[in-house]
Image: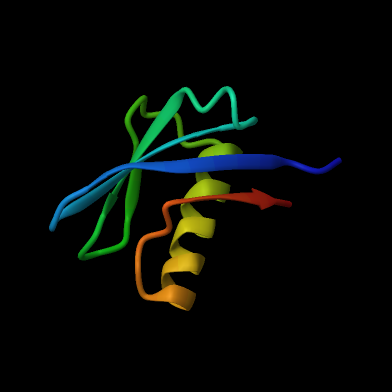
Length: 77
């Protein structure tokens, strides 16, 4: 079974980047905040689950490749 997670950047400041994410493009109801210095993220609702981990890992992977925080994207695993 494939797991999909979509994400969209809501805001970017010098210390943090905020993303909405969810299982479909129309239902990105959860929020994660990425510390832009340490590149560690936290879910705003405190629920560290598979969707959160996939979104966080994909965001960091795209940052590694592009050297900028992605505006949007998705992960399939």
